[in-house]
Amino acid sequence: MTSTNYINADYGIWSWLLTKDHKRIAILYLVSITAMFLLGGLFALMIRLELLTPAGDLVSADTYNKLFTMHGIVMVFFFLIPSIPAVLGNFLIPMMIGARDLAFPRLNLASWYLFVVGALFALYAIFTGGVDTGWTFYTPYSTAAAHTNVIPAALGIFINGFSSILTGLNFIVTIHRMRAPGLTWFRLPLFVWAHYATSIIFILGTPVIAITILLVAVERAFHFGIFDPTLGGDPVLFQHLFWFYSHPAVYIMILPSMGIVSELITCFSRKVIFGYGFVAVSSMAIAVLGFLVWGHHLFLSGQSVYASLIFSVLSFLVAIPSAVKVFNWTATLYRGSIEFAAPMIYALGFIGLFTIGGLTGLFLATLGFDVHVHDTYFVVAHFHYIMVGGAIMGYLGGIHYWWPKISGRMYPEWPARIGAATIFVGFNLTFFPQFLAGYLGMPRRYHMYPPEFQVLNVMSTAGATILGVGYLLPLTYLLWSLRYGKVAPDNPWRATGLEWQTPSPPPTENFATTPVVTEGAYAYSDMHEAEFI
Image (cartoon, rainbow, N blue to C red; front, side, top):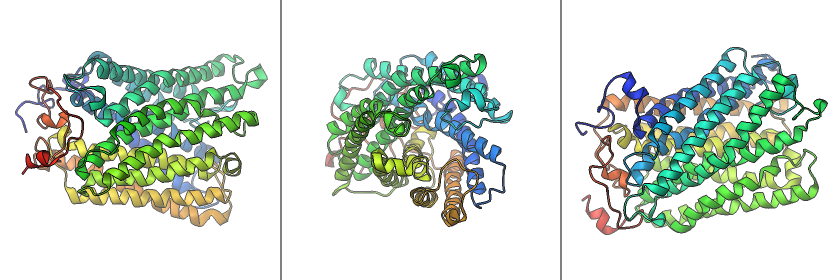
């Protein structure tokens, strides 16, 4: 470990709370986002315990409504959306492009404070009575009927939206203006490409949801006729505005994970990634097409058959760039020198879970099938395979891969492999039975259910328990490694990339001198391997 690095360069709580170092801000995000993840996970566990029996005898129906609403709000807005960009993107993007920091360090710190203020509003709503509208805030229930803390929760999401917008703006300007000499666009790591595409969605989509949620609060407080039909409003307008952002938001969660998986696959296969250009461009294609498919959430809202047909076709189109990535990762693995280290197990788990989630998304894009399974557990299983299975496997894979660089310490390998396998098994046991329950007709958001669905729900709850243990394992051994882990070398994985050319942990300025890039990303070759012999 170097004598002076970003961790020990300065001491005291104020040196962290007032820092402008992108790496320290990433650590602040890591701590606060992990706290929100644990809170959201606690709500999930209570939901699964409630559904263990058909009678709904653990909590009341009102409490159950609040549990799944608060689980959704916390997980979607305060964990899944910010997790990878705010933590790994903040820490890595400047180093990956050879810069000393992000373009606007003060704005970066302000983004974290906005996240914290937004989270405090949400926590206030949760601990002073909760919210029961569902995380989608569907009107007119959220504006007129719900008797819970809708306005504080809405304000929390509104404020948190500015954090996302500013982070996206910072990334885009940094990538455009601060690349090292020789680092052309098509030499950029695919992790950076993925965050560039994600940032575009942040900037173009987040204002829409922020204004929409604010309008809900305004209508609820002042009874304007925006969405409530009894006041002259249109509830379907809310759904259009909400899903215009919230479907691209799925790609905010999954695109950064795809960027991580691209880094892991090429490193632990010791091969140049197959079809680099196609993988990079497919990230941009997903970002663009993601804005055109919101209408497939409204097949049963009364929109015309022709509109539904167009949205169905567009939804199928967005599968093409996603499939391009999976095919290119598979081709990279072919005849590669594969090492099954913990990050690689997470990457392979991501491909499996994302493929299942993506394919079932095609089912839901099909008009007739969507009518059959609309608002059933089939939908719950589908979006958890994408948003939870895919996004979190990528996030944890990235945390493990760059942990030596972040902390300067190595974690124990075998517990890490066992943790990855436990999460994969627990996740599938939790959510695959929900495909069956949904297909057989079990509706979502119900407090009680017919006894014939109990076997599937018991399997789901057992899986959730295993999944919870799986999530606690990395938390345990990563914290352990901070004190007892072996000191990490600068490049423990023999990876390419500028971030591996700095000490572990990196110094405050990242690089002693500005690096010059002379070759493309992922230049794995016999010569590269010989350097580590």
